[in-house]
Image 1: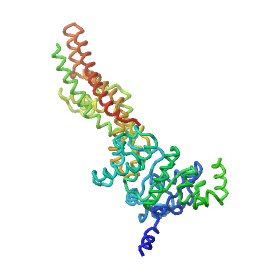
Image 2: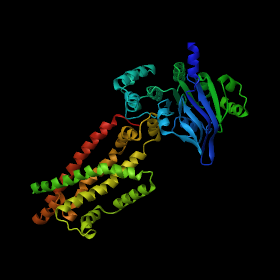
Image 3: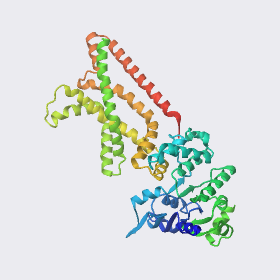
Image 4: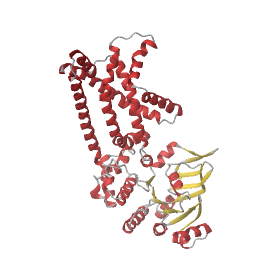
Length: 262
Length: 212
């Protein structure tokens, strides 16, 4: 009985994009892309450079907009269908921004803020939460990402891997349903990559949806529940890492994987 | 002699501080106007900046001083001289400060705006909490340059007869047939600039706790 209730609730994807299209001028970057991530699921978007991965991620994080398509975060419909394509609702966008967090490829920490303030500023200023409570939570988050003794430093005093973990803590402090990683491990050594793997699986275990954009096949295979191949603006193939990385069916995936294996 | 120079120096300081008081905030409007999405506004502000930078401040002072009479037919009394100096200095320095602010704002990486946007900061929160503090650090050296220039530019006020330190020095030189007043005035300008440089260095040091 309890199980079926949970199942009914988790039926709804944390983020869902249907038939999305995006063009810059004449150049169509995303054709008819559909993607959804369920709570607790880790999905990687893999593809060659210029396939539209970055554009997809920018659109998912509302830094850019789809021209067409349906787009929602849980029960929040970010777009509605207008006569000329997708119409974004300002209020929905604002609400949706509270549903996801992103760890940028170059982290984009605020250099003038300490680690602590990087994490606490938005929850206090944007979400209006109690400062002491947020700071207590931030200390927990810092413990979780192994940065406890760095709370009062500024980003430039930290290594790249440490800065990335600050960015993770900063995103987590907003209590997102979906976490995105842009090239999660391209700058990490094997030990840190293993830590990242553990963290991402923890997020998923706690019910968070995780979306990873990467061209690193190895990490995607290890960490993902599902892998989507985005090639030339289309998701040509998707499935478990086993299905699509070990036994790809689409010729474009095969060609891409053949290069990637070198 | 020293006493008279110091009297002039008080006027110099008035011009200096009133100009900063007006031009530092007005420069923000100039920068925002220049960066405005409205092409018309951006062009108008661009033309204003070009005019302010492309003509001598002394001529601008004359223009402000004589405009009420020649343009509007209003007779002005002596007290307007000082006001004209302040107005001319503020509109001139606002253009320079605005350009410095603009270059600072444009030097900010996009990633900072994007990080703030996904965290839900409003436009004004992004500007005042994330962008402005970093811009201040970036523009401090350029602002220092401009502020030191302002100290010396105050001497231009003599050209429309406002008795600041240089005017007084000139009168003393003419009356007493000695160059000493100029030497003393020069020393006072120099010491003033050193004081400013001292504070600028302290401010730069204070903001040196991070780099990006």
